[in-house]
Length: 423
Ligand SMILES: Cc1ncc(COP(=O)(O)O)c(C=O)c1O
Image (cartoon, rainbow, N blue to C red; front, side):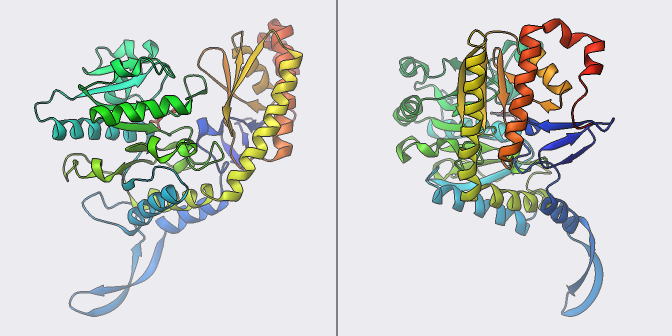
């Protein structure tokens, strides 16, 4: 892929693709957002500034607007971004206790920080060190560094790098009955996705999340919601957990992906109870919180927290669901279930979706898979009704070819004949 604009990408041979993947739920504002490009340029360009030298002489000089200072120094943009995240999270009715933000460079790093913070809280609350276990769930995905990977119980990802870090336990998603035994006095933290993305677009029931919260309260463990994929208005609300009452809100919330619309940034949002256990020097990052990433994320967050955009996500979900209903009617044997909320949607198939993904790509539509035999649709949130309909039409054609005549999908001759419409 070499070029992009809005919901379209172009490859090296100038073929055009409608993008239902948004760089895996990242480009919520689409590709090459013009305002983002402008801010990026403004933040890195050389400008004539009036600089105050010490003592009190004023002169003009050329200076760079900062890209990086390290986390040794405060910069205005990390402050502005953090303030915006906290204010808008609380006013949206999500994580009511949100208080401080640790800014890093990816989703994995945001979760790694969350895991470390949970361990630190456990150490502070139980100095003997016995409260150190982290609980996560089957089919979750929390990242690929050793801590985040240890919380990701997928043999495909863990096995090549085993052994995992000690002290990680795995439960069954949405199984409320197992919570009492799973989360106990040895637990310092529970990490869960309100909607599992990679695991198959599985939606947590509100009562499961409430039960986790209650049990964390009972044993003094920290509850972490990983909204790296499902957050930032992908569900039509700023945060996916926003539908829950405050009594089910988390102690830590992690975000990344759409926060930078493609520019690397992640954040770990914590409440005061967690913040007071973590002291300067406990954790850090050289690049995290740099002025360039934070300025971009500040702009992106303000766009994504727009109620008009959020309302439009729900309208767009309806169009997708109408299209899926049609596909379900046409292929009752193959389309088992539709899952998800807003624009994080999964189509559960009874067959391997890989040939459909290939046939769709050959016709100019990008889609991805997840879980077991699930097609995942996570398009840019700015997608239009026409684009959704265009994509659904291509998806229907791809299914027709892949489900009825799968052999054609893999033949070279077939591929040449199936040149995408926007070539
Ligand atoms: C829910 C969730 N958590 C964490 C991650 C890891 O984020 P990153 O790839 O930015 O490190 C992902 C990435 O897919 C994710 O979907």
